[in-house]
Length: 166
Image (cartoon, rainbow, N blue to C red; front, side, top):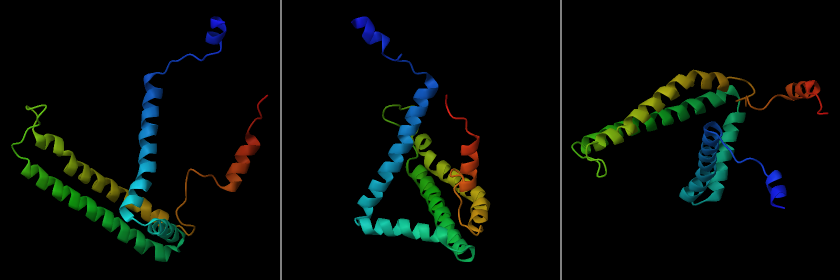
């Protein structure tokens, strides 16, 4: 009887790549699902959150002449936030001058906290580099296109070329 049980079981083996992908998927999924909950908690009003989602959808559905100013204002807010974060991060480094980690006294706290201004500057660079593509997408008459979702014609063509399993 014991041999039958072992015959019907799958081998339990996972390599580094599949395990890494599982961890990454869990991190991304947790971030997506917890962000909505944290936003609801901070807003204290579910209708406000629904309004914000609807407002973002409305902006995406607008004509390009109206949509582009909204996009530029939102990008200016994002750039301003990361510039402020970099500035405050540098202030944190100045305040922490001379402090060391408790668990690793040879490592200065400034080294670990330098991720704040460095990360903010990297986000600023990424936002500025992505701005031309964002404006190009905003200028399209049909709004922002989701590259993940094929058009109806593409989906039908792909379905016609699929070979049914035998």
